[in-house]
Image (tube, rainbow, N blue to C red; front, side):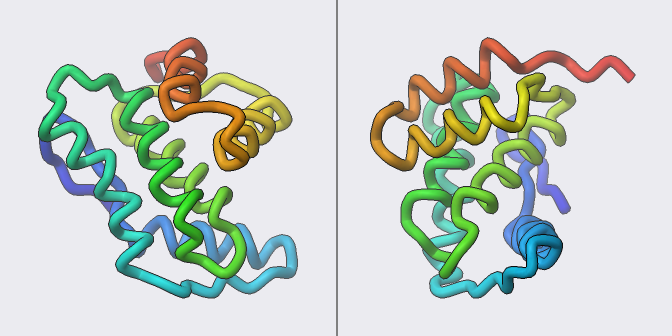
Length: 135
């Protein structure tokens, strides 16, 4: 499910698509991928940022990953869900967790897609609510 680069573990496209499809199935929806290249580019947006901005924090990379998947609409339906799954997976794979309510997270993610919140604002929200996983 992951590749290690730039000091981070990265989710892979197939795993995120599989998780999104399974989640959509629970709601009686079918996931349809319209543009795989656009989807993968969304995942790669954070990886590229980590390469060219080594000071970039995990929260910022997760916000970029969310935005890169949720806004280009590579899926017929479920773009925000796929973006959220990817961002949360990135955070989890790198030893942290996001401690927020589903309602609050959904409001922030919807605000980003609607242009009411910037990627930097979303990153600040993630940063303020991300904690190390101390299992």
